[in-house]
Image (cartoon, rainbow, N blue to C red):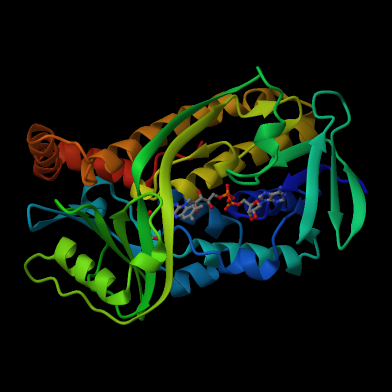
Length: 389
Ligand code: FAD
Ligand code: DHB
């Protein structure tokens, strides 16, 4: 088998890269470890930055998102029992779209399959090699059959636990890591939204987030231990804890049947550089953010936009400056997104061992953010999304 670009992983990064390359007339093969059903039903992120909405629009992927997604022009910040609004539209003239990551993935898979372009599910034993010389290749098995895919470029879009980052030669890169001493318990529930916009809550019992997916489905999160057993959280306990942490004037938590529960540990991580020879990492394969700023999927989109342009330029004119400079260009944005995600996490979570002084400073910073137009605008600017490239 031969193709121009071998893409490992059919998450948002891999699928969007394949779509962008296809629009540019560049062939790729997407190799995914899991099944199509699994990829389409994996519940993860929910907020799309405005530039990401534009990219999906401009590449023909926006129709269902505009029908079913929820445009939010601001967000709520709750602390000290009081709810404050950050008005994105008034502060920076932009909004975000609440549309589940698995819906984006479904739209991308549908586009890929409609184009009749190769997207291989349930591939095992994936191995990348040859990217430091002139002949990159990917070996894998599918349905018990061994395959070798020869290509010009390998895109490692295989997430944090994939095989591409570990394939970078030791000594050629390093990882920057911060692990947080907590996680998020996330649920989906059959209940109409409790609030028109998201609410990020700082409560002395820990962080809570009230989000939504549709007029009939809510998405909610609670700060918990990083290794929390989901079984320890009965539906009653979840609703009671959410009710406590989200309590404020005029807010009424709408409850309903909980049909999905999961725990996500939280970390910040960046691999530098994100490339070696003709192997390029994108998305979670290269970096992870704690979810507090809703940046994970958006960062994956930023990477592949940059990478697709670099690949297009190389095929178009033989100029490899974009490819050579890919990691440096991507990292400039990524570190700003890391800073924002770390800052939002620090601002809203309860840190065991924090002193009363630390707690007062945290509340003072929140008070400053909502009280200063400049500070509110800085939050809004980062939340709706920094320029993608
Ligand atoms: P992924 O979505 O991880 O896609 C990688 C793909 O590669 C997967 O389909 C995987 O099966 C495949 N793969 C892995 N190994 C191999 C292999 N060896 N061969 C072939 N394929 C392979 N972000 C937010 O902003 N808000 C959230 O609430 C939020 N919740 C999250 C919850 C969880 C449990 C996780 C793990 C992440 C969450 N994120 C969240 C982060 C966000 O979902 C990710 O940043 C986003 O999925 C990144 O997309 P990606 O395509 O880079 O990686
Ligand atoms: C959602 C997830 C986030 O991480 C976030 O910051 C806001 C919303 C969500 O899943 O809806």
